[in-house]
Amino acid sequence: MHSFYIPELVDSDTTQKLSDEESLHACKVLRLQSGVKIRVFNGKGLSAIAEIDFIHPKNTSIIISEKPYFEELKYELHIAIAPTKMNERMEWFVEKATEIGATTITFINCHNSERKQINIERFRRIALAAVKQSQRLNLPLINDLTSFQSFCELHKDGFIAHCYNQEKIAFSQIETITNATILIGPEGDFSKEEVDLALKYGYKGLSLGSNRLRTETAGIVAVTQFMQHILN
Amino acid sequence: MHSFYIPELVDSDTTQKLSDEESLHACKVLRLQSGVKIRVFNGKGLSAIAEIDFIHPKNTSIIISEKPYFEELKYELHIAIAPTKMNERMEWFVEKATEIGATTITFINCHNSERKQINIERFRRIALAAVKQSQRLNLPLINDLTSFQSFCELHKDGFIAHCYNQEKIAFSQIETITNATILIGPEGDFSKEEVDLALKYGYKGLSLGSNRLRTETAGIVAVTQFMQHILN
Image 1 (tube, rainbow over the protein chains, first blue to last red):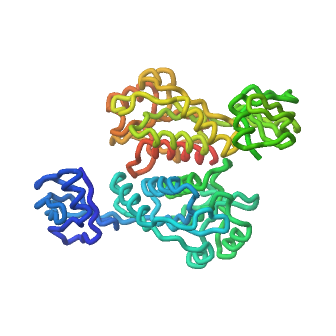
Image 2 (image 1 turned 180 degrees about the horizontal axis):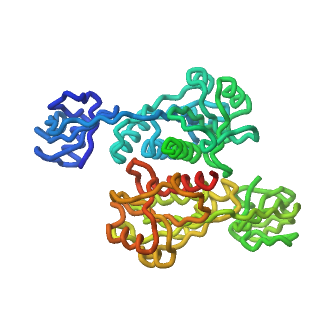
Image 3 (image 1 turned 90 degrees about the vertical axis):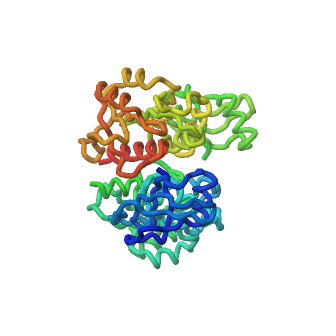
């Protein structure tokens, strides 16, 4: 069953419309017909089974055929990551982090960052496609580039994954937590000053294991380890 | 420091030669000079610091400058995975699985497999690059396509990650094990017959969490979860 994103969907809806973009996709790419069953979701936990009433490339209307289902998100995982030089490595990070369970992704500008500009809309489209593919009910929030310092000021008491030889903890060593912010550094790591700054804001050094990981791999490993941690 | 792969390297070596390929890379791409310090490794746990004695695109000789270091591998993680339709998804699986810690990767032909041919040499080159990048001392073994049934006959008592609604366990629920074989199915999952066959050969159903994951994502999640498991 195909999935369509309707951010305005609420629990009491009995009919709805697909956006221009989703209408075009349903009509011209998937070539769906009236009467076809689809799945719609609002990206904030609510989903419903619906039937296409009228199909049109710009204006598709649907009838909600079963009472919508709401699933409350039981955790929050915010990954703040420095974009890599090769953009496609970030693209797959966004896809995989979404599939596995990140709830917010923020791009951060660090001292050693090699890329200072990103195409945030493209990352949002990738996250939406990954949410549909994995049938997650929550669409991660994707935030534009912000400076390392502003991010730490705004989001205190998280974890910072770095390669310096100083005190770090692993998720396996701590009591189960259901909210975490994790900082993932650029190629060439965070600067020592950035690590110190994060510690001042209540961050703890995070160990992701003994292997040296690329930025995007560290991001995926952090998401996976956190998801395994909350299952324990 | 740049890393070079010398499969013939042994503990007692005081000098060595780089292969044609590595010599060309050192000479023409990296433009290294005599006297430069490099790191050499045999992919089976042994590494050493060396100095370039004579540089030549086909025949570079080195002097081992410090006693080689041997690190015994304390676990075995064999991932058997059905290649995805899009080859680049398998390429990044091989890169990431190598960085994170897989020790053997075997490609398997399944009932729902969409790809029946792979370029094994390309995957081996990707694994070698990832080992160098992550400074792992062990190069994963990359095995060519084999049938699902032959694989299960040869490697009994592993784990099979599938989406059927039947008994499964998670790594967090079992006592620490240091050797595991994990089967990851194709797009469209294993067939019910394949799951039953695996169970007959002593496999256990493996849960990787509640989200529906793409083949290559499931592979990465399995490697990460196993690596976290053996740290506990």
